Amino acid sequence: AQKVTQAQTEISVVEKEDVTLDCVYETRDTTYYLFWYKQPPSGELVFLIRRNSFDEQNEISGRYSWNFQKSTSSFNFTITASQVVDSAVYFCALSEPRTYKYIFGTGTRLKVLA
Amino acid sequence: GAVVSQHPSRVICKSGTSVKIECRSLDFQATTMFWYRQFPKKSLMLMATSNEGSKATYEQGVEKDKFLINHASLTLSTLTVTSAHPEDSSFYICSARDQWKNTEAFFGQGTRLTVV
Image: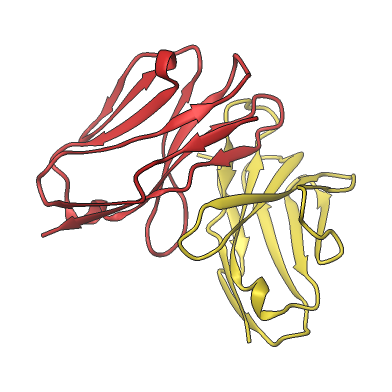
C-alpha cells in the first residue's frame, strides 16, 4: 500500500531560522511522483515542487530546497531564512503513476514567529 | 499554466438540502478529475475519481448516493452533496488531470461547505 508520513505535526520557528520538514513515503511502484504543496489559511493548495522517482537530484528554488533520497524513501523540504509569510500547512504527496491519485501526508503546520 | 476553477468557494446550506460544487478545467481537457475532502486540521482524503462519460469510482467508505459525481464534459465535473447534514461540513477540493501531460494533476481553489 502507498503511504506518506509527515511525522512533524507542528513546528514553530523564529523568523530567519532554517527549518526542515520531513516526508517519508512508501510505495511498491518504481515510477512515481512526489510533491510538496503549501496550504495557507485560505485553503487553496499552492504547488511547490514535483519530483519524479528517477530524478534524485536535489533542487533549490530561492529559499526553498528539497532533498530526495530513494534509499531512505524520504523527500525532505528545507526553508532557509524563514519568513512570517511561510506560515502555512505543508503537505507532501505521492502520486500513483497510472491513476494520478494523490496520497497526501497528514501535513506539517509551520508557524514562523516575528 | 493549467488552471482549474472551483465554484463556489464558500457555501452555507441548510440541513437536508443539496448543494452542487463545480470543478472546471479552464485551459485544458480533463478526462479524469478527482474529488478530495479535508476535515479541519486534517489531511486531504480522496473521495472519488470522476471519469468523463462514465461512472465515477468511489473510494472505500464514501457513500456514492450521498456524494453524486457527474463528469459530463471534458472540462466540467460536479459534486453534489445530497441531503446535507452538519457532519458533511468540510473543505472539498477537486483536481484535474491534463490528458496530454502525464506529470501531475492541477487543483482547484477548494469549496468550504458549512451545513447548518
